Length: 410
Image (cartoon, rainbow, N blue to C red):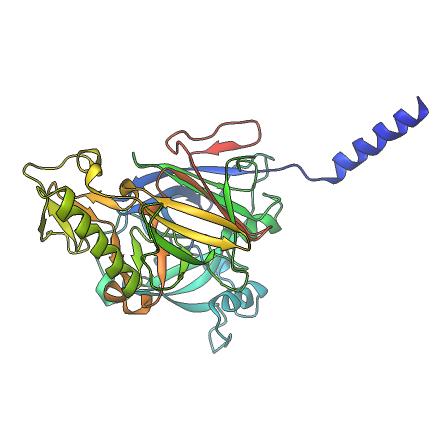
């Protein structure tokens, strides 16, 4: 009896020492087409105001377009965030040092004491200043963060001035020291550096922080490239149909980027994919004819005899793709069925949602981005604790509710 009591006491002590799993679950809004964004609603400031933030696993810093004053800003859904002098992070602050480490730039403090920055994106840039303010965020352990550091972007370049967009800015979810996820972990809001998203083909979905929502089985896992600043499973081999030979001349360097609406292939795998897709159509679905789409982002489209309403109407005309990642003797396969690379345009045409990255964005030459369209109806998990990237088919229009996580519709 004494031995059993001693064992029970040891187990209770162990349970007290192991922090409970925690999670933050946020509802997603938007769609791949025609909105082109998936975003959360976040309450920021004191008193809190609502903002739409585009989820972006390819960006480090969370930031808002703001009135500091604004030089070149888009027309956004909400009134621009306006910082007070007390909210500014100084250049000498460690948060500013972390930001510049994430950006891969040397920090230089000039005459201004504030932490100024410039972020370069694929097709734009943002100039701003680092600030701190309150994020109203519910977690399963009941913790509320007091302040979060984020960017106040006051210049998005002349070409973005007064251009309407459906979001207020970006929720940076990439790997880094000043990401929202890193700050939540350092404040004890979550216990594991894990995030995941589930984007529904019906529109919407959910985003989660922490490991409480990660399925215990059925997930396809593959190691992440530890040296890459983005979420990369390394090199993958592209196949057309599961039993076919590889259609890419060499393994492709791949990045998972939820901030990209479409999927972008480098020149060779893109041309190879386009070639096999067209050859299949010519032999099996001659009623589809190639057409020029008014939406310039959709560069390859086909029309039918009548207006196409759903992908199911033409799904039989297209074959599945797959990306195969090798991990020693094991292989992890990302299946890409037609509904994960096709779009029905507003004109009723079926269009290829895989674009030529070398033509769309010169800086994407040689890079292959798996974007939102290819992540549809899958829970995609970024586990930085174990350096693993995972995915599993999931009903993404059902937001999880459990004792381990409180759903936050902020």
